[in-house]
Image (tube, one colour):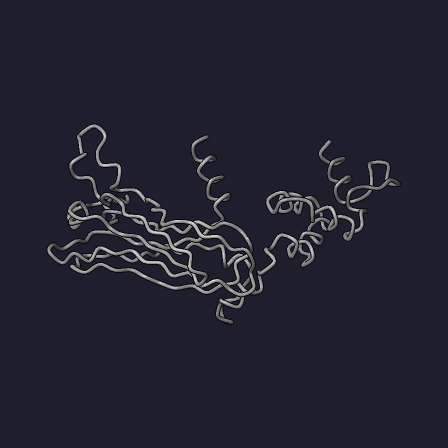
Length: 246
């Protein structure tokens, strides 16, 4: 049966005079691929040469990219344009703060976002990673000050949209107990700053964002700031639903 399956996928039949999947023109296969998801295309590309060739077509993959993908590519330095996958890569590097009195993280991004509703969030982690006996552990010796005063998150856009969010505290030392621990320590948490609406990608939208705790009556530290994400709100909601179902 294995030989029959091989003949079917590579072309030809067990009788030697039939046709198989390998005889389908690549252009036809590529046309079908435009209606499939990237994981489905990658799985089918393993069938035979014709499917692999169709899966390598620029026409197939261009149909999977957002309409402003060229704008995204223009943001990458030429020496790092190894392919679209580079835009989806997550780097295992995050900024770690030992101790500071005036804490402020801000940034600005100007980009032709497609029309949609977007959510901006900061990804934060309390506690420092280290290795002990070959295993990654998290220590909180330097984590302090985040339970004294709240942190303020803000965003604004070039078309006068504004949003702000004041978390009660980034740390909940008062809620620690031996059974449940502290749910804000030792795990990555996304803090939602707010949403903004884009009605057209022309002109480009400028987004300003910040995270501040500038009360200098006390120091704070022991925190990672990983990234700031801007994601379509419906996509972000879908991710949360999938996590709840797992």
